[in-house]
Image (cartoon, rainbow over the protein chains, first blue to last red):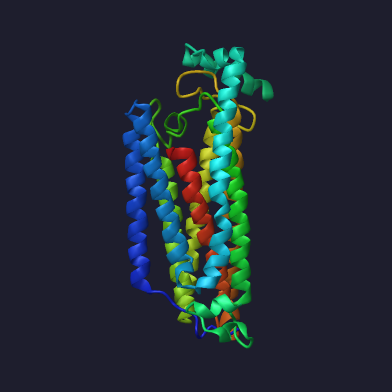
Length: 139
Length: 227
């Protein structure tokens, strides 16, 4: 096929810029990850996780748009790929909502299970030992 | 069809004699394959998310993934090893772009060098993953067995390890296939197959696949190690 009319993005400079952007985004993600370890507040952790997800989507955009060259393709072709992926919007919202609802139902109607899931295991070492025993049994 | 005429594209694109999407057939099909693969990975990750949302507790990734090869006993270094893996994959993606660009300029030597670098990056990533799997296995983690407690100190289920090994395993298998594809591309380049053909479009298709593997890792890395 003729590829004489294919668009060739911005070349070496574009690759360098996108590499820098991806690296910086990853470093920010990791910094947020490290920072999050010391935070106990539940709502703050959720907010940081939200920021990390947004950064993840930004990285995905740069990889698909520039490395995979999709941004320089013809618009109709982009649409045939991107529009079906919009199903993920429904997919994610519906399933996570369902999972959350299932958890609430279990906690409401299965008090025994809730109690078990809230019982702390005192000694961590003991947990490890039973695990080793289980591993040895396998052998 | 009439709607396309109103957009920037002139009507002649759809009246025959010209490729409407202006891409080679194989490349377009690679895009559609990757789209379907995105749904497979998406289904896996959403199943993971649903299960996590349905659980009262979940292990803390910073406690589980806190080791690297040769680490002194008793210390912990969360996120360090996986950051190295992430950067390896990003860099190998960059060398793949350079190989594709060199192919468009018909520079065989540059294609070969960048393909070799990409293959090394892929193998390095697989090596890291093999080490991590072995390490976790020695700690007692495998499909159906989870030695780690939940973040709040309660007993965890095996969902965590099941999803971790299934999804990183599926991704690792993609990396492995990508490395094989890249090796085939390297051999074809060295045999002057693309020089004779007059274009390096095959490298572009292999490149799309390789970038997709990197793309999936962005999601897997975030979902399992960061969040």
